[in-house]
Length: 98
Image (cartoon, rainbow, N blue to C red; front, side, top):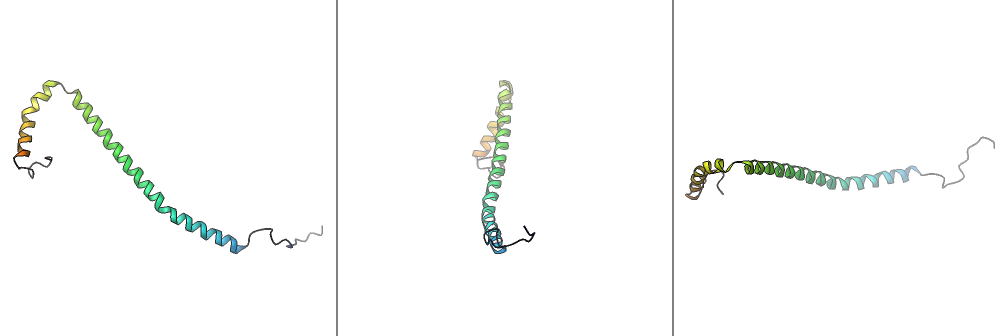
């Protein structure tokens, strides 16, 4: 042990070229995976909006189910008039006609 560091073993570590090649290859792989992550985020966002829409629709249906029969019957003439206007070709005046 004379205190000198010797570099006689050529397989002791990585060269700078090997490290650079590894970093470049990792960058290419990660760059190729970016669209996959973006698509997954968009799909998750669409699912969130769909779940919100379903939740709102269920809430509205529940409110309709809780209405008394008298309330529904009282609004029937107005609904019939609306349906007639849709069937008589007034679709532009009634945006909800289908």
